[in-house]
Image (cartoon, rainbow, N blue to C red; front, side):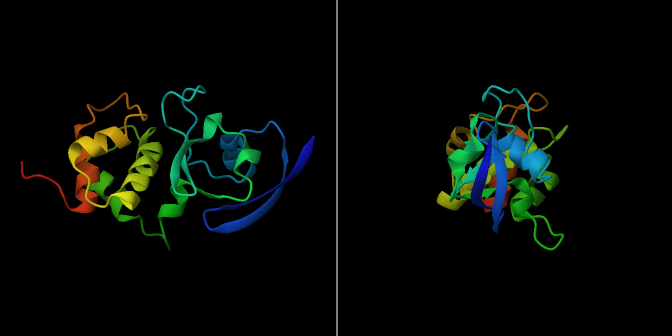
Length: 157
C-alpha cells in the first residue's frame, strides 16, 4: 500500500506516493532518478549509499523512506551548483581520492557532514568520520588527503 511521503530532497519539497516498505535508496534511485547514491552491500556495511538526513550521514539502504518524512535529504547531486562541482568534489578529483568511483559519493557525503560540523578536522577525525565507508581500490590515504585539501589542512609531502 502506498501513502504520501512529504520531505525535501536536495532542497526541493516533494510529495510522492511511496510504498510503506520502500527503502530510501530505492526511492532516490528509482523514484527520483538520483543515481549518484550507490547500492553496494545491501546490508549497511559499505557506506556507498550514504546520504545526509538533516545534515547527518545516513545509510539509505537500511532506511525506510517514510522514516525521513518531513526531513531534508541530501544526495551527492546536491553538492554541485549550475554545473560546478563543490570544493570537496574537486579535491577528490585533484588529489586522486577516487579510483573506480563506486564508493566516492558515499565517501564525499560522509566527508561533507564532517566538514559542516568541523571545518578543520585532523587526519584522525577524518578517518573516524569515514570509518563506515569502505573502498576496495585505495589504501584510504588519497581519500584522507582529498578531505584535507578541501578544508585547506593538507600536509606538505
